[in-house]
Amino acid sequence: MAFGKFAKYSPDEISFNPRQFDLVKEIDTLVDYVRREDAARHSLSFRSTATALSAHTDPVHLKYILVNLLQNAVKYSAPGTAIEVALHEQDNTALLVVTDQGIGIPGDALDELFSPFYRANNVDGRPGTGLGLAIVKRAARIIGARLEVDSKLDSGTRFTVHIPLRGGFN
Image 1 (cartoon, rainbow, N blue to C red):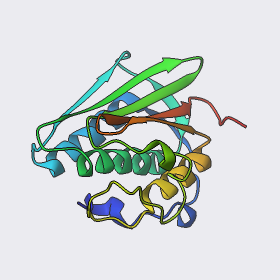
Image 2: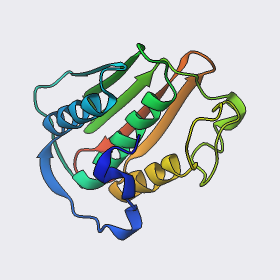
Image 3: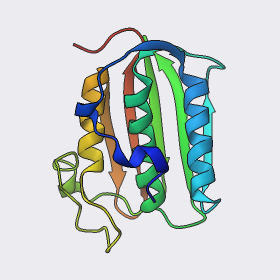
């Protein structure tokens, strides 16, 4: 699943253009986009503790991060399972959390997960290049965000993106 215009994204070819925008509205739009692309194979939900959350960052890079994480959740989760996106604010940071009930990531793969061309040994022939999460890491670095991953084999994965609401985490 290529998710249209995001399939050709390259963070180094797109300049950093931060602007003020509403994260809740942007994320809701992206989740709806992925929901339509997924054609109801998964239960995809979005919840936010805020009705609006203003951020000053680059929406193009942020869109790629979220779409790629959702694309992976769809790819590595069985049809009919839930994929949840949550957003809340903590200490001038937006926490964007993507949780799935997929195949999970082996513990020994977590250190290499964001390396270019790396794919865990449990992907079972699913298509991919091993570049998606490496590009996510690069896009996160560009916008000053931090990434966390928690996973349990055969139980699912949770990615948390720490997005600074005003400037990066230098």
